[in-house]
Length: 139
Image 1 (spheres, rainbow, N blue to C red):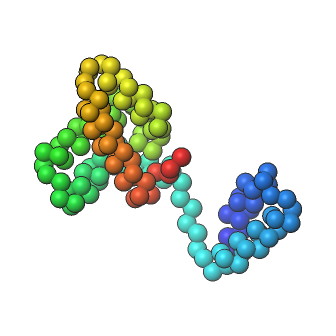
Image 2 (cartoon, one colour):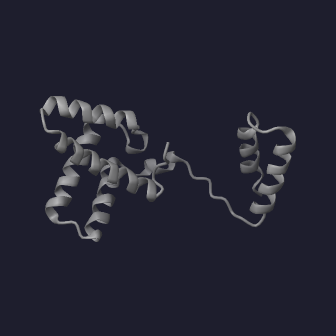
């Protein structure tokens, strides 16, 4: 039942384990996964939501946490500006994309480092939330 996932794991571990370690790993996986049902989810499964839908879900979560309307608007504007500028689906945005965005934003807008830090904190909160909700994988 779980043979495909066990085979994939063993294949990935081939470069770092010897044959006896692979055999032991196979036995442990078969034992631990014997009565488990595995649902195979990939990052691409998240493409059924647009950047705007992810952002709205995040804003809704922040609303439930008790953020003020002013804060929610600032979060929404900050995230939308970033996603529109980077031009990628949220699940494909990398740390390097965000660093470049912040650097370019700082140069283009001639703003303070504290302003950039505020933007960085918002984006960090957003991507941490996406990770916690299993919409993205930490790379």
